[in-house]
Length: 283
Image (cartoon, rainbow, N blue to C red):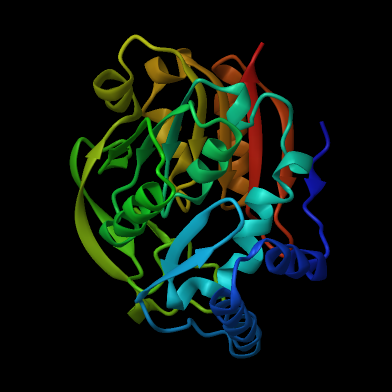
């Protein structure tokens, strides 16, 4: 299967945001976000400000931080406008009964799944305390049911592990943050200790004897170690949606999942990036 470059018109993304946003106050926030994005690109610096900001759209609301409002230009259209075009059959919320979301972050992905299927059960795994605050706000604000939050990292380590965060940018965090971001400076990164379990332990404690319809992984570069920690878990999983953060990671994760009985059914790469997504399912 060929890997296709993820390509879309940014003007269409902006138009989509304005079409679905609700109210004048939100329009002002969006305009500020567009301005911030422009400055972000010109200066290659991280925006500042970690106060919560709520955006009301026509069918949902999103909590994020002031420092991240510019990221809606990338995240929201990908999840709520382009997802159907980029996602193979079987990977929507409507197609699944139980989703394990590792790297749930602020909850944008799980919200997209819930909008497609309010009844889907989601286990949301996130160790970053700053992202967890926004995750809880988004679950509460949108009155999402049947979502179980698990405050832990998933890795080869059992017990505790070091975890890197950027307080102003909760969308970025991991056991080892990928340094390939132009705006990233070392002094932005804080290291904290968080609980850590293996993928097999996660399934044993929170999935039990159920079959996982879809395992989603987006963890800033630790995706391979997560897969390695879950031989039993992968045997009880039907589909995997995995974001990789380098070409080496893509190849290593692909080879491991092929050995575990999955086949590649789709993929895309994000523009101007080594990041991309693999869609895998059992035969």
